[in-house]
Length: 600
Image (cartoon, rainbow, N blue to C red; front, side):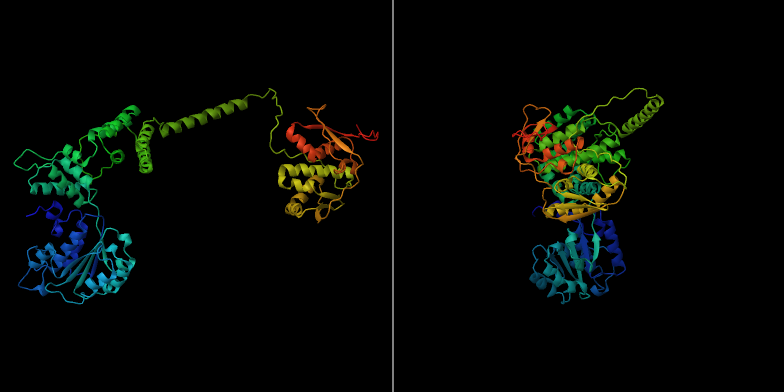
């Protein structure tokens, strides 16, 4: 007879043999005892935990002939477990029962397969047994059309039909299907449960397995009994220890060699070095891991699992489902809770970066060094902060008690930022606005706009103003500047009210700007700068705008300020200032024809 793997040889044949699914077995037994048989069941859960096995046990329990003399129509269920001796139980176990049909949904995805296997045969009565049972494995692989074809049949099947659906991906099952069946959730098996089952099978096979070796096999199964038994088969094929050698048994080192897992001594040594903040020793451990040919990602997973165990142990919790496979003690006492939390977060980030990095060793070594850096505890930082606050308060109190007798010397430093808003010159509201006063007010408006509304400054410079007793008219040539001033019209009215202490209405007009007076003929302006009085002279054509100071009758200091402002706006002066830096200190008029009326 050909060799039969352990997962098939020791497959559970009754509800009592199911491992880790006691709740599901209890509910199904109770339903059988009360004769409350549903027309559809849905088993969901991870792979290798007994979904298909439980479906076969339920099918055998429904069709078991425990009382052959009474006949199938008068069945009696005493303990609700199949006998595994009658013809129906044996045929279901072998997979050749005529009334129990197992369908692999992965190979019958099309709607034609469902119509041929299920819908066309569902109306036929069972050949011998009480129920016609359809076991559809991996039902989530069916197409949408197949699910739609199965809806009506699954909702109202004949009385002699029972559906048992099994799936590993419940989220792919349409709600219209899952709502028509009773769902049973199969939970992953714990390492302790798998380890006990491995020990039981080893005794049946006359094989001695150490507890640590069985626990490591159970842990490597990842919650799947079938995966763990496959690993156990692999171990036995490498080490045939039952050939008359009574003292031979499977040890932990042999399992580690077959699975390629990192040695526990090396893992514990790495954890000790990290707990002592010894970066050199931890990096040496990583070098040994790579030198022995271990996978660095697998080692990282082992380290993360070790820190998880230390974290829950530090919190006073012991996972009852975890089977111990080593007597080595992790350095839990050498690290506090904050350090363990920080290390687990660093290892999680390390795992994410190693997944997509082309140099995983560098990532692992970087995070190892980061874990070895000594960190100040949070409580100590809080104490330092409280001490600093106390000392600061005492120092402030001492400084407040000392009289301030020393003079504070200050100096002005030029800052290339917006100029501060100028002081407001108070004008009486009843005083008339002559040209000199109106120019002063307008200069203040320009100064405030430069510091508060720089976006409208250019439009204000290009406008022509006319002052009246109750309003100010601004004339602009271009629509863009007119719209800009219009958006800030209320701001201008509020600003004028702050300066004049009375409300003036700002009226906007569009029109061509004409010079107020004709400029003198043959007029040339020259500019003299503070740092280049003898050299820095620039001539400007005489067709520029007239001297606004003379137009408004402004004399004295106001005249000089206005001349400087117009000189800065001059196109030639702009070109000159782009080359030579420095402020304009004086503006003079010069006549090349010897006109003595011009100022020097």
